[in-house]
Length: 263
Image (tube, rainbow, N blue to C red; front, top):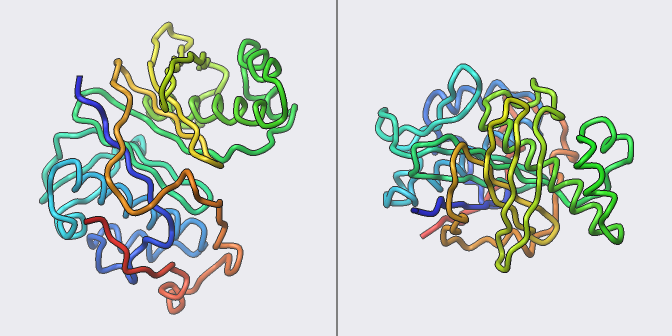
């Protein structure tokens, strides 16, 4: 079984301007007037395009000139190379100044989600989790373990809802997360849908973050793509708070600048 590949990129990796986007991607970015939405879109696109190019053995330059991320009517992303559908499944996510992308050659839908390990209120857990999930969170010993458990469950739900292509339009209590434990950086999980379908997946903690993966069929634990960035050592950032909204004239100024690239 070929392992899916994953990549994490920080805001500081974003190239200047929008020349690295396709015309359609650049037009969408320019329509975003909230800095948070604009930067998250740019970072998710950069990460996905870079990951797809690397997974397909294309040069880094091909990420901007040949790879495009499009969306199905449901909102689910898919990758194209030179205008044609790429032979991979993709899912991307972003949180607190970082984005991750999962690329799989298996012909099954995948989903991934990135969350901060941060406090979640008892009301949040009661409103969005099933009884079994609540018991799992409450059984953890210590604040950090409970925070990890709550965000792990929430993240796995988000990953599964991406496989279902519904996102949060679907009641989160219609998917139930169960977590396994094995030796290794990736740990197994299963998400059971109220229809009886099961989505196997994986999770791992990455410093201040937790990353989950779910799929419509079993996949090997993801393998990381080589990169100069280490999310496990990163501090979360919220750069958009400096300038919450941008005008078309100041859009470029709102984008993080860096010459970093994957080689």
